[in-house]
Length: 321
Image (cartoon, rainbow, N blue to C red; front, side, top):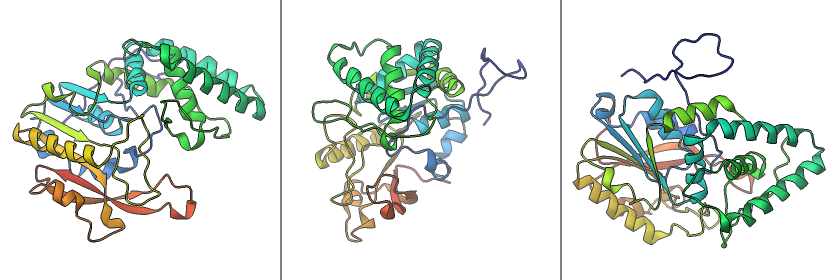
């Protein structure tokens, strides 16, 4: 299957020939799938490579690593993404509709930030974070917002560990990261993402929001907040409401519903058997579906010695090649 190309008006290109965007996530994201793409690609439905998938749906879009990869590699007609995190959806809509204004704003923000001393940079970070949280109540999340999206990207690139985390009141609360010369503006990536988003429908809502777009020619990838596998491993605060066991059960029921509609489904989650070999939580939730294990790195842990290889689960309603 040949990738789709875009004729883009991009600066600093050596040739005006067809440019093939290779979009990368514009945000760092806990649980992002960039490092797992090579493994995940081995389990994509065969009908995708055969050109039988016309719609791709991703209800927990996050940083969109799988979405951007598929959009740049396969001739899929329609993309539908959603997330419960309204800040994230605002960023996607802004990049879709106002990418050049965003690049200009980020470029000036980057120059201003790098001209500061270390102590001034930290002060600037917390000032930006305070303004970001203060304006949350008055933000219209249905329209693109260049300034707020620039703040999201800035905070993500300069905060500790590149996290997006909110407190019980919905305020961004990750501390300063003390990085040397972080890249804040990345025009090529933003333009590539915007090109893909031109043929994408973007929604704010929970995982059931995309149901009207699912049919037998749809591939749906679920990457929900993971079930914590230890008392210290839970990281679910991407938004105010936690994704608890009841939500995992509701998602499993929805998965079965879409299966009955003939859609091709893939779901990622943690593997509780990393801790307890007898834990069959997901085997019980997804009986009669295909469950595979992939190797992943534990990237977020307060103890660096505990960051290492673990397995994660892939749950599919089809047999991969």
